[in-house]
Each structure stands twice: as C-alpha cells, then as structure tokens.
Image 1 (cartoon, rainbow, N blue to C red):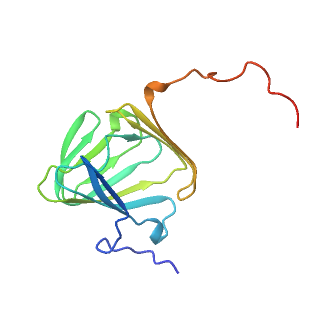
Image 2 (cartoon, helix red, strand yellow):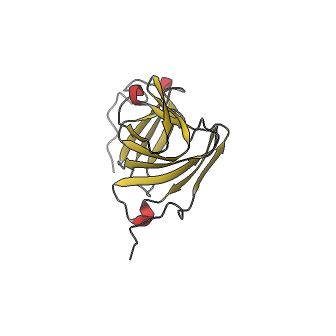
Image 3 (cartoon, rainbow, N blue to C red):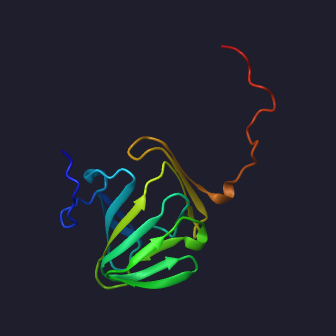
Length: 168
C-alpha cells in the first residue's frame, strides 16, 4: 500500500543541477506519495543562485512556499523581496507573469513547489527568447522540444503542393 505522506526532512534529492548560476537540488516526491494531478518538490537553492532561467508557463500554474532563507522573486517586469513563510502565486500566461526565484541571502533557501500537471505544456523564456514544448503524460515518453523563438517557419514549409501518393 502506498503511503500518502512525505516528511520534508526525509525526501530524496534526485534532481541535482550544477550549472553555474543555475545550481540547486530538488526532491520530486509527488509520485512517491500517490499524487496524480499535482506535482510537488522541495528545492534547496544555494546563496547567490537561481534554480532555473526566467520563464512562464502556458499550462501549469505554480505555487511556492518559502520555508527558509531570503531572496528575490523576478515576476514580469518587477522584483520582489521574499522570505520565510511567503506564499508565491505564479499563474499561467505570457512574459507578464514570467518568474524566477533567486537566493540573495547568505544561507541556503528551501522552498516547497506545487503545480498542476498538464499533458501539453508550453514554456517561454523571455531572457533568451526560447520556447519549450512538452506533450505526454508524466513518466511516459512524449514530445519534448526546446527551440529559439526566432526559428519560426511558414505554415506550409516543407509541405508538398501535390496530393500524397495512393497505394498500399
């Protein structure tokens, strides 16, 4: 029988990023406690680091609860100081709701992240003008593509003007 409880002091960190400014540890534990429509993770963010680039989601809404530490939330064109017990809402939308959590404090920041899970997601990265497309159920192979937004092509690009051959 699946135990529907996780203690944040005991979760396993399985997603480790060590990429310069983007350095963090995440414990993604939602599947382990039986979550189906929501994703949960505990993130530990070292001082002076961000977990991921500035981005916005078109399908998944996120919520963050700061457990320890202080930092800054980039949100659209604004910046907000954040601290222990702050609850942050990151709704779906375009660059006006793009977000990024940065640890500006002197100790590691810990926060709980919660989001709904969708089968089709588009994520934009306003700083680098990239787009990420994902389609497929969590834990299953699917379509995942990251590309530069300026690589737009015409709707009929690479399409033949002739009907497909008949046969069988």
